[in-house]
Amino acid sequence: MRLEGPGGRLLRWTRLQTLVVLLLCLSVAAASSLPWLIKPKVQPGSLAPFEAIAPKDALVQDSTALEQQRASLVARSVVQVIDQEQTQQLKQRLEQQLLQLQEVTNTGSGARIGPVNLSEPEQKWLEQRSEQEHLAWDAAVRSTANRMLSQGLVSNLAVEQLRRAADLQLKAVALKEPASRSLAAKVLTSTLRGSSNLRTDPNLSKQLIEEQLTKQAIPTIQVRKGDVITRKGEPISPQAYDVLDYFGRVRREPQPLIWFQRFVDCLLYTSDAADDTPCVDLGGRRI
Image (tube, rainbow, N blue to C red; front, side):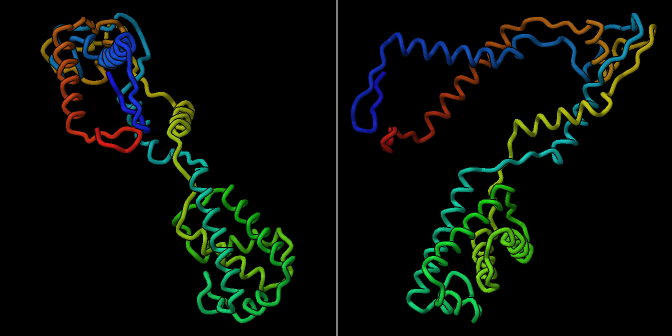
């Protein structure tokens, strides 16, 4: 096997390396398809091939009700964390706003073409501020943005609420002039409005769902000794299937022919999909 690297250099794989990669891929594919190899002989909804009587009292977990509980928690159990990449992009946007504000101030056109609409006191303060005040003001805006981003930012927050949040955060920094504080709030609002630096963490979301499930009562099926679980020829309900499985009445037998047929079909499908997909190497060339 030969692969062309980004610099045009050919990367050669030995036969042993190719064989190892191929065996690894086949092993992963085979492990993923094990449910096809070992399949229960009865399923919920199928006709019972026998009559089953409960041999003893038991509390059996109701898997169907448990999955319904889990599904109901998914929509309201989303855990979001700070997206560092998006946070960095918003910080860069803020730097562009600060730079643009300084440029238009130097040209005396800030009231007309600045990144935010300036009031007369804000325009006057910009024109009269010293270089030391300029640096201190920029630092205060940056630190306020960092605090707001560290707390998480949602994209659907109303602009007025975002401006008030920025104004409250600015009270923690030493901006004595009302014009400087109102301008800082405008710059922060203009930078952050309509943006979010949060992303959903699937692992933490799943962990939260499991924690909430443990706090709730696990749905169970109460079985008494002598209860009829299934009658021959009648459909097996999901609850009856759980009870049969609990008492070891669900036989699982290997079905190698079905497994092999489906395994080969998946390999062929994957191969066809790969042939239809445009591929490029690391240098951006189509291969």
